[in-house]
Image 1 (tube, helix red, strand yellow):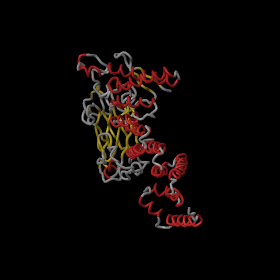
Image 2 (cartoon, helix red, strand yellow):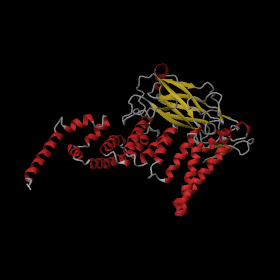
Image 3 (cartoon, helix red, strand yellow):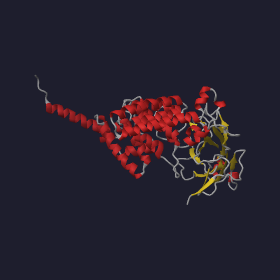
Image 4 (spheres, one colour):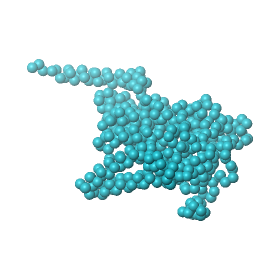
Length: 469
């Protein structure tokens, strides 16, 4: 057998290695071309590429991509600890490109993008939600052998968007179909079914989960199995009671009009609203909601009138086909919750401190303000009166059956101009005010913050007052 000239072979390999290293590091070489064509873009991209030297790029081309991703992810931890969230974005993207099988990076990245970017008053930047979903879709496709990224994507639809429940059902079903899913996490699919008006499907799933939990407890009487069984049983019992008391079964039988149910007669919520521009980019929302129990949170949105992909009280969150971590630098989208207490709400939103999040730089000269309330997103004690689809709710002015097919919701809009928001031109010395036609100033502003009116157990009695000291 002919022996290989090993010193000569090693010499050739060394020459090739040095030549490749030279091609990486020389200006205009492989590294520069990679950054230009494939590297993360923008200010954040420039930052992360400044942290990567040619030898690291060389390492990943030699098959150590996972190693390089790990190094970068360790560095990302430092940025998390320092609160330097902008610097984390390009590292997340680069790590997922280098090691697309690392589930934790995708999951952490989705959470970071969807939840961590907030303004001075802790409102999250909704412009990032579509990016988080796109990252989740990519991660789920790359790791379809595990439930985790299907579940994380479903959670954003269910919790963060909290309105487009068919999407939550879709992703939770995909997660539940994976064998490695944690039993307790399958409960979220039942909750999503319920919010999506798939009540029978929710009940059927609870029945399946209860049988499995009882079998597991019979085999192993651990505290975990006991807790799982009791939780499923409790959820199932609550759902059955609500199906009866809210009139859902009667509606399916066709005799809802003949019985007495908690959702009858429909209750007039008496919504009204006024928006005042107190200072440039400082908006004051006040209004009425004729529902005494504490717990209502009315969604308010301020956006460009022609915001791309805008729908009533939401966006086309699923429009992106690829991951883009750079939000629009011109469009403005603010979403907040108007907390109702003592039948009224009063909230002041200062958008002047976060010019990056609220740039007001688009060509739009008009901005739409949306008010929206959907019973499906409400807590259970509110749904007990209004039902899953709003059948127990009425409003003489703003009850809407079109913006969410099959549902009765509260929805209306007001409009502000750019000059009004910036308090300039004719509005420099005049306070801009827009309001619904039914708004009345008396009795519609917040009362003492330390007093909460509590509804009486008997309808004729006056509400009790709870004073908080």
